[in-house]
Length: 349
Ligand SMILES: Cc1cc2nc3c(=O)[nH]c(=O)nc-3n(C[C@H](O)[C@H](O)[C@H](O)COP(=O)(O)OP(=O)(O)OC[C@H]3O[C@@H](n4cnc5c(N)ncnc54)[C@H](O)[C@@H]3O)c2cc1C
Image (cartoon, rainbow, N blue to C red; front, side, top):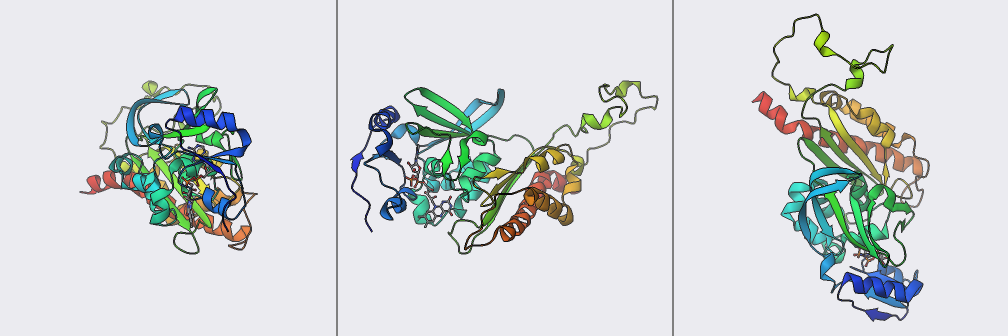
């Protein structure tokens, strides 16, 4: 089948693209790599009178480092900006992404086939918002910020607010996704992504992405030191009557989880985070989280509360949940071991 006829527009700037979107209204749609849109048009699942092509818009392509990025009101040391029109293949080849946003680099080869990645873009992947896609889940797991432009100005939308339902996002019809910002994790961190699909290149039946950061101070969670009868009390270690031992060399396996994110895909109408499980893990000793049995518990807990898991010809909801739990467990082990790995090796050596 061929798509219904449409007028083709090739704006030379993001501003021009946004003006066209506003002027042409509901009949217009942005086209980036075309890897999701063209099949939908060709199958006549969708039809638009105007397609606005981003191929000649230079300002929404490229990968660069950024300093002093602002996330949720807090300023962090650095970030990586990726233009919406950057292809998945370019992201897969980027040394900067591999070094600074390893989870994104590791997710990239899982997307379709190389022909698809040569044309498909990160902006298209996020705007299309397929619940089983890798990049939306990675953006959510890494608390990425999605940058947009519309006739009303620019917005920075946290990934946690971007995916609103099946194939739907916080983007307004006249809003262009211009870029994505990923905060660079400093210190000890580990990342992993796992998925299961029927054939290589297919969308995942289920998947899990994990990001773990360990603290650098090795301080226990202060809440553990509070007087249980008076939770408002401030712990005062100075008043201890016992003489203090000189500090011992730090065992890296005693590091604590300062941040962890468990992202799920293919397991709901949007990519999801297992937020309650994450909260329970913060402050835990990393060395207590490396056993396979503990990872299995984390996997089961991560999927336990899911109530909108799809059921289709690729598998019923119960099957997807079992697969999802196993994928979380596998990814968890890889990520926590990576976070501990170098330090543990140094201590042993
Ligand atoms: C056989 C096959 C297998 C695939 N397997 C996978 C897979 O395993 N994992 C996966 O994640 N993807 C997979 N894909 C989809 C692929 O990753 C697409 O590239 C991606 O979903 C869309 O990117 P695109 O640049 O091609 O966007 P397009 O198809 O051009 O656009 C997709 C949607 O996003 C909108 N859009 C695009 N760019 C912008 C923008 N800058 N601002 C606002 N709206 C925008 C468009 O209007 C459209 O609605 C597969 C595709 C095929 C054909």
